[in-house]
Image (cartoon, rainbow, N blue to C red):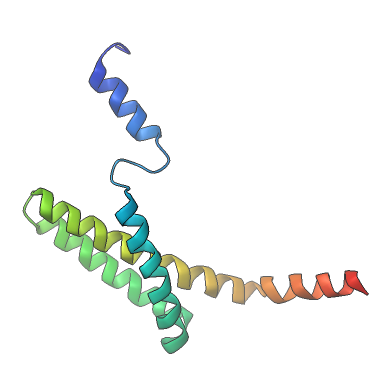
Length: 115
């Protein structure tokens, strides 16, 4: 069974940390998504940015499921998904860290150790 080329290729793709759909373009799109997420979170608040990003991401997923199975539809859907994944992750991390007061506590402990 392990001698089958397609099986070995599938195992490599599944175990790959970046997956088969990752590319340099996805990384660039994700950077723009993070920048947009920070800007949006500053304007509407972290929780609303997180909630709205999740809603839009669900809509993109539905559109991708209904779209024709063509390389162009897949590529554009994956780029939109990469942008929205970054848009979704950043506000959640900011909101979570602010709720835990993780950043101010660390700075406070660091300042105490200095003195």
